[in-house]
Length: 424
Image 1 (cartoon, one colour):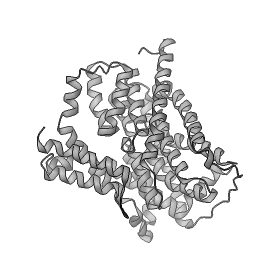
Image 2: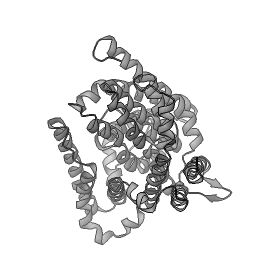
Image 3: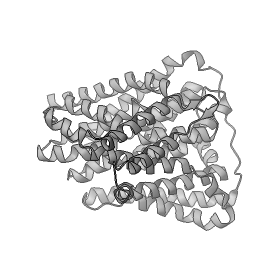
């Protein structure tokens, strides 16, 4: 490999390293700064041209995140986030009960509005609950991160890679197919997550009954706009679901849904320009850098050549799931799916293989922080509120959890094979 081909991997190494340590002495090192610096080095070293770097940035993702960040900031600033959450969580009677409701609520929202959306609104919410009810903050933050990853598995609109698979595989009735293949193991995995967190944090979970107090709106006029925004978002998502059911070839981009949801907020923005200052610009820069770095790694052709020379048989579901997890840690899950999709198409892959790719590439997010974009969003948002998510602890819990999650998915596939619904 030439020097320019080595640079992207050096950049990736430092991104992973600083994601783990995130601090030198008393100086905090933002993850986005290392990712952006790595991308700049790739351009300066000739690993990728400036024009190609700019083209590699997925503008739809950046616009989607910008809109959702601004909507979430409005929900939080107006008090509507905590006011609305009271209706959902007010019946929880203990810390364990709260954790269980949090897991399934996060999973449901992830499947409906995408995992990134849930983690954007969920991070400040769980920090609020932790501080209010004196529950370990790391426990709730890690629970949120794992639950949005696991919860987004069962839906074709739960995350970007699932949507990519649902559209490009040309499957009929993608919601029905995803539900049959992935909803039962997802429900089992969510209960496994609950028992995991309860056992690991059993000494830190108190048994004091929770007392819920309804939060008053801090900005009623902005809260009204937030309510309209939420209605538009939900209506748009259900419209998207109906469109996919009618004709999977027609796609209503999530970017359009996010823009539609932002429109009511924009009416009040001139009076609240400070909301723009509170947006997590660092995460947006992280994604800009990530797109450039991942494209630079892709351009080296190292992984593609490795796949060919190693004669890896993606037709084997265990092999496909294993390779998806490994390479998702290097490329991230969406580029990984983009790499595997043409290979599966050439091999005339079965629906079961596409579903295995969807499950494994998503659950890979529970192994390392960089395995899912939602993890990075959670970290950045938590640090804005002066809370830390330890990368090492995330991985120590996430690896055994992720392996069990993958095993449950595979066992379900074997069961479907035995009753002749699928063939693996």
